[in-house]
Figure 1 (cartoon, helix red, strand yellow):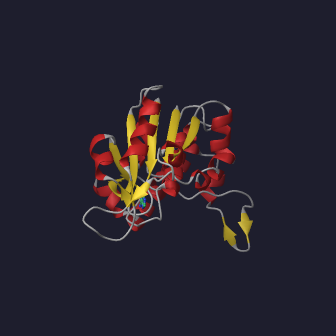
Figure 2 (cartoon, helix red, strand yellow):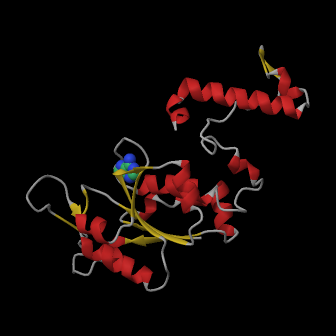
Figure 3 (tube, helix red, strand yellow):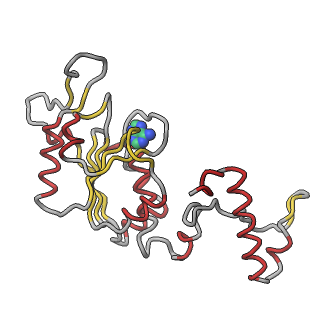
Amino acid sequence: MRIDIITLFPELLSSPFESSILKRAIASNLVKINFHNLRDYAQNKYKQVDDYQYGGGSGMVIKIEPIDRCINYLKNKNNYEEVIYLTPQGEKLTQKISNKLSLSKNIIIICGHYKGIDQRVRDHLVTKEISIGDFVLSGGELAACILCDSIIRLIPGVLGDETSALSDSFQDQLLSYPIYTRPEKYKNWKVPKILLSGDFKKINSWREKNALEKTKRIRPDLLKN
Ligand code: ADE
């Protein structure tokens, strides 16, 4: 998979891809991440990428020309399934969306900043708008890291134990069951006995029951779907 990220602040994006699972996925060529600094696609002398809002109002708006130029450059080299714009006004990110995107060959992600981007980018160039939640970030870069992480870990071969992505929270619309490791007893806090029993049938039904109870308590909305 190839992910091209268009941003004004590439330095905000680099470190999540330099450790752990994402680093290994890149090293194994299971995914290639490319950062494109929007300023490199600005043509005027001052490398201007933003401008005032028509109609007045505070905050600068990212211009259409450098974004269109960057997307054109990429589209001349690759075919893209999606051009994603990260915005709090987008469809809320879910495991279902990440599952689907993880099957793509190439995607482009545009990170907004300041007041946002010219609406014509959204109307004519973007194919999908995604929000990572009902809160406002300073820009799309951190949201892009979250989106990429959630997609990349689903690419076959990225996680050593391929079943472990399948048992993630939300993969079956449930929160994950409680998990424990050694020691068996810490202070007076004990690991549930059943998990030490070796009886996998009983362990599985304990896990299912606990996942369901936890979901009912914390995220009853998940059970309504
Ligand atoms: N940019 C700013 N806030 C955002 C959010 N909640 N999700 C995605 N992109 C954003």
